[in-house]
Length: 255
Length: 282
Image: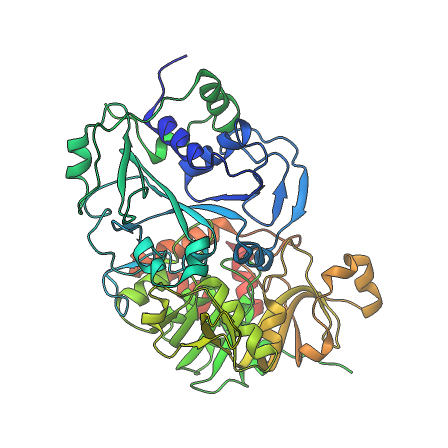
């Protein structure tokens, strides 16, 4: 089998974010997160719940590309039930960050001042409620100092510094587990909950990561490499989950 | 009892400055024939409350929207609504952007005639900066937790689109999701429901299970038969989204000549029937 692509390494890093979650609703936005969530379910987290992207929970999630098996519906989940479910707390969502700061405050609403933005993006969507109700991870397909910023233009997803000011109830449910980018993996396992470089993808240097980050990252000691996919994971991705290689459209393989 | 009416009659109820709610979600089961009639009318300065799709893009483009209350505006298969983006980036409207769940809570509060409903959604985010009129409330119980007091989103007029209905205003959705259409109806003083097909009440039982009949006649003042009325948004099982049409619509945001052509062909028409004819002839 050929070597793992950058997109596949990123997908495994997303899958790792779900490790230990058990029976929770796994929601993902973006191609690589969709591959990662399916990979986690197909390997070490078989009890994850996943939707068809519309309003049913499927026993076997639909592949990201390629032929889909006949879907078996586990339950109905229209949008109003999604809200009920997420406020109840049983969910881990991977959202895209157009901007993110060192405490994990995220923006995908707009770039520039909200009253008259330079670029209108998705809007708040469910980010404010999601982030204070259940576990969240972020996906950044194109890390740069314009995405990893000192201060986000608008806070859609709530970071650790803001969540800490909201009191003990929210502190219990607020959890930003992981940030996965095309370059590296980050967490917030630090005393002040500032973002820490957890691993760099094979072929990426720590200096490159620092150059593409607009704030001071926590770097303790030698930074390990992001783990490579196993042979089983590679064949799952290539044969079942994403046979057409849509992941590489989102994260092209470095030359 | 016969509540049948037309898009024109329904839209004639609108006055400048009113607050309207539009059902559906993104580019899904939107009452587009009514939206098209609003475009033909002279009404302006509307406050629009909705989970936005091309309804918002078209109304913004026509300069009808003074204030938008929303969680997102999306065409689903095209994640960002380009006409809405253009209006936002020109600073053309007041953007009361909320968490998606807060919008539901505001409609639910209005539908229960409550001044507000408490929620945690919004806390810590810039939703509260963007909407300085939204206040916090402290729990009166021992926890004394501070929560968002999501104010009721009271509507002057609500517009929804269903798959089937009867002349009395009972409505039935046959697709995968009811969205929040029932809440828009209960939150509004005046309610209009367009439907793909008006059928005898007794025939609704043959169309789908009991649970699909979410709109009862106390929630509706006027019923409009509008086959293809949700076009180009999806309205399953009657039809899917017209993706080619939607793509063409989206592309006009970047090309004024293309927009003028689109407007001439599909919007500068006297009636919905002419629109449906223009779509068929494409």
